[in-house]
Length: 479
Image (cartoon, rainbow, N blue to C red):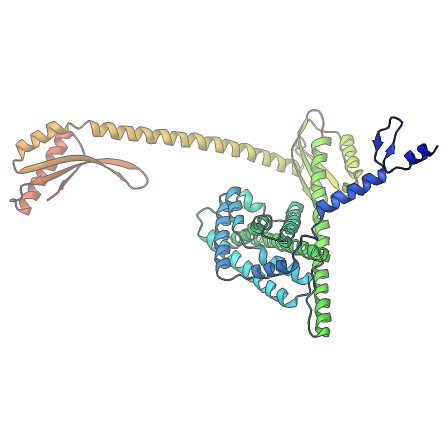
């Protein structure tokens, strides 16, 4: 009995076969210990060094200003030619994150002086970036919109998420003891900041205020969420508050900083929720149209959704869909939790009396005509290239057809004062067409007078035109 009791009281329980089985409590304890060590950043945080580093990166003077200008130029070029690789290259050298991280940290530690300095440098950064991008797009020969530019004219939930997690990654990296390549972490922040600022400059350069305003709005909300991420991490890691000799001033500063933090957090939370709802609306309506709008003989050629009005317009061609089926679709989409307020409108191309059907037909025709235009344009370009090739070949054969050796012997017999004769083809263009002009360079006896040389030149030119049956040629004297 004693042996049984002792064996049941051991730390590791044994089953009937004598195998040790860890208890659930033991597993939970070790799991907590493992994950606690894995995710712990408090013990490896250098608060004083982090504050000093953030303050150092706030200023936009000298080297930082020039680095910003050059990186904005590179990013603008990348957006202008729709090259993500070039934009990423610009992000690697961009110093954009300094003032925004400074705003978040200064609010978290109640440092009103650093907050003022951060806001001033943030304004300098925005003006300098927008002005640089504006000047580039003003002189750029490529004026058409690119997907990279259009994508930065309105915020999406993905932009906000990039700003949040990029800001978190950067401030956590900055708080680590020792040296860490925080510039690499800054790429995530530059992703959220550089393209919108360049797009603001593009919108101003082409006088498209909607583009400029949308891009500036995207930059503003990204900046808010980056600063908010910095604020949250600084609070979680327990950064020390700035102490003032005047306790009243300290209290007032703390209240002001807290008020600023609340003013930043509340609108950003509402904005985040609104963007999330809009993204859910777009995704769910797209899934509904792709998976549910299906009728034999009918095909969806286009659909559009509007989050503000809650309208989803679906354009169909082919066999007419009966009204009963359309009503089933309407009820089905409204039964979905996120789409209860949606108004589904079906427009069928077979209904020629419908204004929307006429509009659909026009859009389809436009697409067909555009496709035909692109194909014809390619055919024309191919023919132009073949014509140019044949013209070059013709010029080559024309130049090869002149019997220069025989001509030179006859010229020497006819013009005894001729000392040297050379021949070449000059290719001349007026930028609409090209032509080849046979050109003869002659050297006369130096004892001849200028007037005598000119008379001989004219006679030689006339003789060469008759001899070679050429309407156009040139004869030039080299002495």
